[in-house]
Image (tube, rainbow, N blue to C red; front, side, top):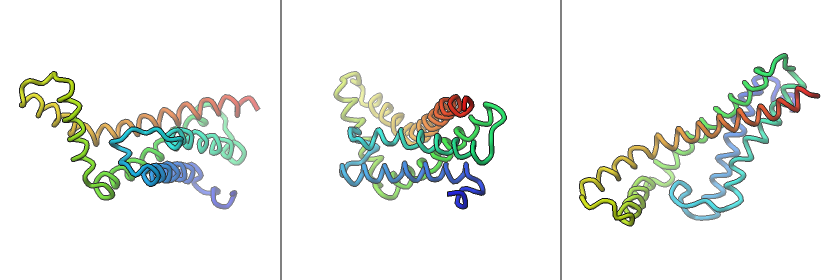
Length: 171
């Protein structure tokens, strides 16, 4: 493990976390057979998507503590945020590949799902308002996915680094 992580360990831990998240997403897709961006997630693999970066960040901070050392609490937080950002980056790239190449009808299915939900509410008597609401949801789908992934992974990175940092600093 020392030779693999001897140079740029934060980068490697971040990429490992991202690729494990992608692997987890592919397992969900293969086992459920449904598009994970449209259908509900109820499997244990959904929880794993949150646990993977936490575990990787904890391992990374412990590794860095042993091999690099920390002089301040900020130096503990920084790797967590970087690993969270790298995890989000890998996941965002995968998401875009999935939406545009693996399941290219994702946006069409998303639009149909939104149309059904909005019609079921009965709040739109004017077809033009319904069309505008659907278009707004479609326009927000990709940026929303990207921003949500980035925000969640940075938050997980920060929180995992703080909690791990508390225990690492007290040792």
